[in-house]
Each structure stands twice: as C-alpha cells, then as structure tokens.
Image (cartoon, rainbow, N blue to C red; front, top):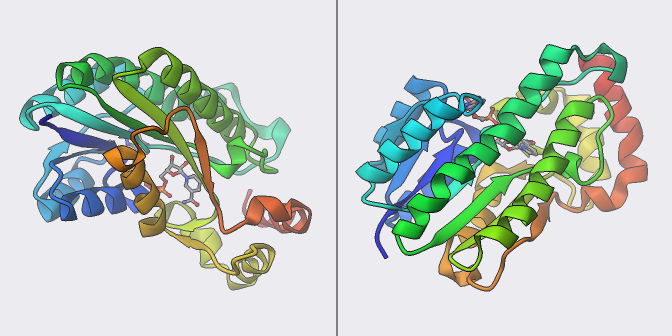
Length: 256
Ligand code: NAD
C-alpha cells in the first residue's frame, strides 16, 4: 500500500499536531487549510505537501484533495479536522451563521469523504478520522448550531463506516477542552480556566498532541478492527456535566 494522509485544518492546533506526529512516523502528509500561508508553513516544517481550500467549497476542496493524492502517490488516510464554532444565545444566531457552521463542520466533512473514498480504494483502502466534539455528544450552552453540526458529524461518520467498509474504516474523535488558538481567549481567562480544570476529573485542559495521538492510532493499522466509533477524549469532563454547567454559563455570559 502506498500513499499519504491529508489533514484538513492542518495549519493550526490539533490538525498541525496530527501533521507533525504523522511526519515523525515517516508518513507523507498533505496539509490542507483555507489559510494558505499556515498550510505552507506546516508543510515546510514536516516536509509535506501544502494544499489550500475552503472546505465549505466542495468543488475547490475536491480539486485540492485530488491534487494532494496525486502528489502523495495515493491516499490512505484523511482527517477532517477543519472546524469553526461560535458562542452566543440560542435566539441570537442568524441564518447565515447557522449555515456557515454547518457548511464547514458537516458539509465539508461529507464532501471530503465523498471525494476521498474512490482515491482510497484506488490506493488499496484506508482510514478516515472526523473531528467532532464533546458538544456533539452533549450540547454546550451557547453553541447550539456547533453542537448540532458536531452531532451530525458523529452520525455521518457511522453512516460512512457502514457504507465504505470493508476497504475504508471511518471513526470520529470528540475532544473536550483542548488548548489551541481556537479557544485561547477562554483558556487565557485564568478564573474561567481554573473553573474548567476543577470540573475536569483529570484536573487540566487537554493538549493538541494528546488528541493527535488518538487520531494517528485510528489512522494506523493498529486499529484495523475499529470502525464506526466515536471516541471521547476529554479528561472525564462529560462525566462531570452537572459541575460543568455553571462554568459554561459563565463562559456564555462573558464571551458571547
Ligand atoms: P484551530 O482554530 O487552532 O485550527 C483550525 C484550523 O482549521 C485553522 O488552521 C483554520 O484556518 C482551519 N479552517 C477553519 N475553517 C476552515 C475552512 N472552512 N476550510 C479550511 N480550513 C479551515 O482549531 P482546533 O482547536 O485545532 O480545532 C480543530 C478541530 O477540533 C475543529 O473541528 C474543532 O471544532 C475541534 N474541536 C476543538 C476543541 C478544542 O477545545 N480546541 C474541542 C472540541 C473539538
């Protein structure tokens, strides 16, 4: 089997950590990001291929995935990690905001898998990992469209696992609070951060490299019998929802 792995949203945070870890294991990496310079910077660092598209634009995304697969001499893995969210009260979301959150998180994941599936079969098969969220397992106050879109990503991953087997495995990963540029404002608020840490059984925020460990495992043959699963990586915070609820309310009050 030859070929590489393409990571969407690979220019920052969790996606960049996946690119670094794959490259360290000798895997050829395609770094796709709507931010072309971020993609170029991480691609240069890991000796990979820089790709740029907005995942919400299915035609542009398909063209870049095909170009990436060609440059990587095949495609054996895809990580749909590009994602965006927002924090505001339920009645404040506009149609445009709801559409955008679904277009990036859900439709981008669907169309990337649709393009990647035949490319992976041509390479002898592969593994897809979609990045969802604990908010898709249990909705977060102030993140109604994001929570719904991530729940849809979890269901979509299971549907794809059914239909793309046996050549292609599909799983999702649902991180809790991970310190990345996405939530630096929240993590940088010391009072809020210590409340989040107190409500998390493992007592701290997660790191991007801890999420990428799990993603790289799911991409590898070490997980060859694992498909259609959603794996939660959150330091136990979901188990402690009652204690976390007031914290999330403070977060909404302060940052929406
Ligand atoms: P990040 O903001 O650090 O990185 C996201 C990357 O995706 C950026 O480089 C951005 O340019 C790119 N991107 C965004 N929209 C895009 C688009 N339309 N097309 C192409 N690229 C796009 O964020 P992160 O924290 O690393 O998040 C990665 C994924 O993990 C997201 O799907 C996010 O929802 C999910 N997640 C993050 C956390 C967390 O606490 N950080 C928790 C749960 C889930």
